[in-house]
Image (cartoon, rainbow, N blue to C red; front, side):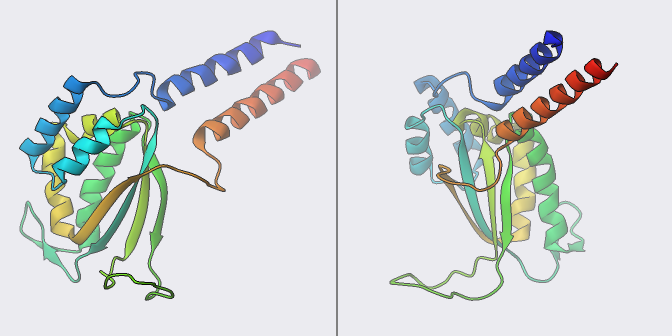
Length: 205
């Protein structure tokens, strides 16, 4: 057996885990105060009381943000050029650079779904607000979310979101069950497969 292959695979997976999982622990009190001030200064539209409670309850673990939203109908003025533009194109100007930013901190989409019809079942619910899109985004930690939101360029991106959407809400959630393979498990299987193939090649050669 070529131990170098398996040691290399384990080292690579260790590096991946250091990137993918939070190693800094929960937010400190000073960090929370700083991020609340940043959110207030940028007027992100967040409920600061809910945001503060969420940050104060930080357990240092990953979470998934559930976003529900509806795009404006027809064309809308581009927030920079003023040209009438499809809101789907405008929301991409927000989504694409923001996803690149959070990916550096191991954030990534989990799923996106489009509404196909009206309510099939409802029980003592308020009137249907008419949301059309559901999207979930994984964050490595609450710190990573706030670091991304506090970036100066995010204030510039936020205007695209405001221009493209007629309404939106976002809730932090904890993933309880998923039938889809999580990235850390997929990476482990891929490295295991590659190491096995490399091992077999060395035996043949």
